[in-house]
Image 1 (cartoon, rainbow, N blue to C red):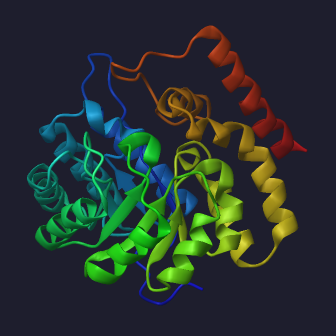
Image 2: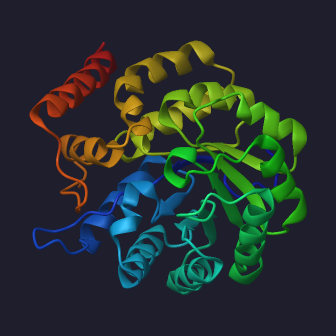
Amino acid sequence: MIGPMAHFEGIIPAVTTPFDAAGAIDEAALERNVAAYLDAGVHGLVANGTMAEAGSLSAQERRTVVAAIARAAAGRVPVIAGVSAGTPSAAIGLAADAAEAGATALMMLPPLGYHGDAREVTAFYRAVAEAGGLPLMAYNNPAASGVDMAPELIAALGREIENLVAVKECSGDVRRIPAIIALAPELEVLVGGDDWALEGFCAGATGWVTGVADVVPAECVELWERCRAGELDRARAIYQRMLPVARFDMTPKLVQYFKPAMDEVGLVGGPVRPPRLELTEPEREDLAAALRVLRERAAA
């Protein structure tokens, strides 16, 4: 059950970063995408996460992204800035920039480039949480960070670090969600993968940080609402329709799949930045097949 002080309830798109033909951030397109997500009823927005290609953005570009999203959000929903980095000082610098640009919360992986133990991971999160001054969401994505934070460690982070109030659980194992809730009922647990969202909601997740909501935000909001209302037959029908697209989220090329999918539905995805390359023709055919399922079942 979600308490009245939940920071990260509901559907939270991990917003992509649109680039123009010259490779610069297209701020106008970014703001239009955010406006469409707000119109669809989303409950929050993540800037500078994996979907945003944060690793290919400069510090100034990260500030630009947060500022554009914050302008478009205009205080209606939380703006959560990704600040993952290899050292506490680097993450603290990103957090300060994000706060100045309008972020209302932070999200962070364990230290990048080093497989820290529990003591080191805890010290890393504590340093950033204390200096950042905003609610912090831990981000457990072993494929991205090389560190798999077990439920016991995540629960300890929530107990020991005042500003650490939530975790985005992206291990791919939905059993982690009830395990974390049992160990730390005060900690908000969010689904971090798109093809186990319904399972995560039913297991007690407070929300969903999602890539597929960049493509079909209204459907994601309806899925969340149907699950909360206990209307599982209707929730499953929505889920089956979006699953072929959602499954791209748990692959290394999630950005390359979701950006052209956004273009197909009238949003602005646009090109990706190196080291990413555009999809191959067989990959484009896979995406087209997934989008056909989405459209055909919606029309049925």
